[in-house]
Figure 1: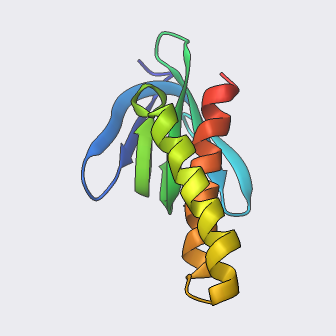
Figure 2: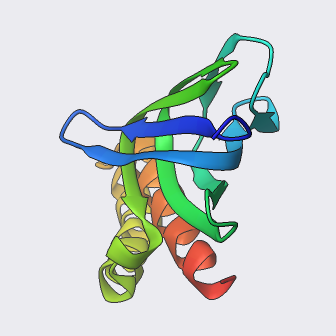
Length: 137
């Protein structure tokens, strides 16, 4: 299929996506970017957010990604993410619990100066992003 591009989303643990798609839109660290077949090659970092793509059949799909790198080539997009989950694999209750734990750490432990603020903010960002992705579909 000449009009499609190969998309691979990989974490240290597994291959999350490996399929031909029509378009990819990802949360770059400098803003969202899109890639179609024939795109000029580039390499960029990504931030926590929703990666959107249209599969070969024309259905829009979403993947949660958190940190990492993306390499775009004319015929392939590779996302090397710290973590990634297909939307159907996100557990809403687990995401809500993670958000509540992170908020609690930021509020309660900040006074005690026992929390790693950067880690707690990152955990909160990941949880909120998962919840927002689920609610916006």
